[in-house]
Length: 172
Length: 235
Image (cartoon, rainbow over all chains, first blue to last red; front, side):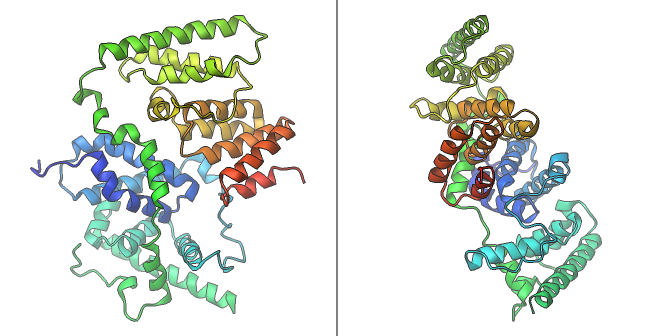
């Protein structure tokens, strides 16, 4: 058992909530569902924080919860059959229409590119490229061998690059 | 964050590729302070040190227990009164709103009365199809902070309502009324209103739906749900 003082849920919230929210969105959770899923993450944190033994970093532990909550959410029947009204369907031919501002357009572009990835590759790309975890930590969070995580990273990059190039071609 | 033999991140590369630029911009995609505050509000009980798990805190005070017992007794009497008056379409709103408020003070470890509270509340609210839209009263903030403990969470309640829309809009509307009573300052107020407006349309209560849609547009300008509200409006 680590002797480091265990943080309170409030401390975890203050330090990590915004990044958990961000990660959930990048894992494909629609904006409208992000508050619910964040709530689920923190309910789990509240329930399990007392059991957190410090074998991994708190951040690694938290993101593990985040990945599981997002994964379970995507498997719910009403989520599988539902397409959020606020997001364009993936087959839409006009995703390059700029949003109200550049930030929104950039955000939509990121979501589009991430959406070409399956769950395994998406998890790795989000954790490594956006959240800045080391590959060893990524492998621990998604619970796969390190080499598998590397493979997913490379394959994910290639798929995103191909999607970005295809968008560029379509815009010409 | 150690790197070791990790490949360079695309967002760190110089010059940055278009993909690297997009991934770098993704780091800025954090929720607004408002969104975080709303989330903190929903988590109130979990974040509040005074509400640690039951095992770590002493039980409720005698005063709270007495209050809970009085509240439960009031609920039972209220529910019986309503059930005995089948033609009473619209009980006084003050009574209806006081029901969840009374239930909200019940401590978590009074399990049996809580179950009774929950069903009694449902009975009263279902018997009151004309319950008003979100109410404003000085007691509501406290009610909002604790009301999630004795029944479905706000997301769960609204999910039930959403699912009921097509098959039973009256049920959907009733569930949104329950949600408004239990979570008057809930973070999903917009979603609740969208469902309620759609339910009213399906019930043929167009004028009420129009009024509520107008109020929605005023309360939530620029809402992502505005299009859905407009789609539900007659052309």
